Length: 66
Image (tube, rainbow, N blue to C red; front, side, top):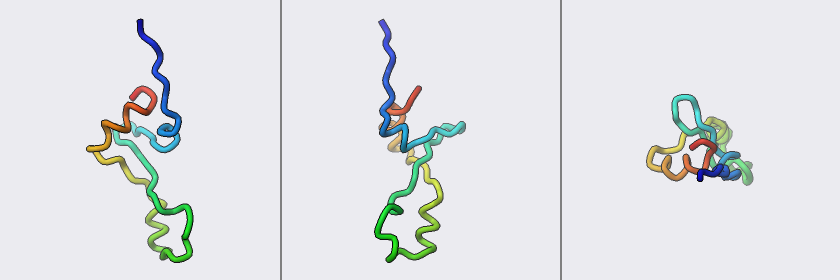
């Protein structure tokens, strides 16, 4: 008997699987205490990052159809 596996909602809000198979994530450090951080640094934090291949085995099972 098979059953439906539930998605971990916390992971679904933080990660997105791209068509290439890479998992996109947001960079940390852009929530608070922004006045002391340089504009250049904050702009670099806007850009998306990808989950490292060594961590994919932890992230993918938490996502839908992972």
